[in-house]
Length: 311
Image (cartoon, rainbow, N blue to C red; front, side, top):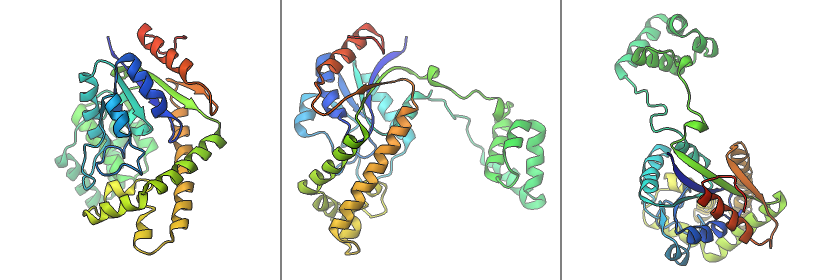
């Protein structure tokens, strides 16, 4: 039987924290962060990281554990988060990084057909000697379906398809790609569905609040501590927009307006991503609505083992 995992997901500023904390307290659960920026130490304001009081009220995992000089991949997140999920009795995923949710929804062996530098070099030498068409012709013989969808000049993918066949004896086009039903956990996913104009207004207010709390000082402190402007952590919203201000290449009001625009666009992309996931139960909500019925429904559904039960 698969382990049940609650997920409270959705776009930035939609109210995930306000919903997840009482759910975690009611179920005596622990929160596993699903945010690609909250993993970094010293990046608190720009990531809307849970406050010390919130983290004292409910145990949090996958927050504040990585130096901002370090790079971190989706695959690394999947491995680390799975270890947390296995240790926690009632894990509650909270965040808006869709790729992280996808990585946790796929079997660990997804895409696990390894690589062989020897095989790749063999086909690269053939391409150098006889041209990409010769490599494509070989693919036609062993995997005509893959060959039909790949242009001969798409040499990297053509070689990868041949590599998979050489390693497994099975054409890439015949290999089953896992779906939702193959997820290693029984996900019970929820999101707050705010009217778009309300969501965007909350995004802009959050940016104003971040600036008032000292976002520019936070970014300067990171730079002064030796975090390179091109570090992965510095590509996050709020950080990359403040860097030109520090270098004197952009006025602060212009950077703030740019940050608001980019965050609205990011929220829209998050909505598009999560709306495609049929597992998510969306709760329509207006500002001022009581969260208690939503909390009751999530908790009762979890206790019943029914992702879409009613209160």
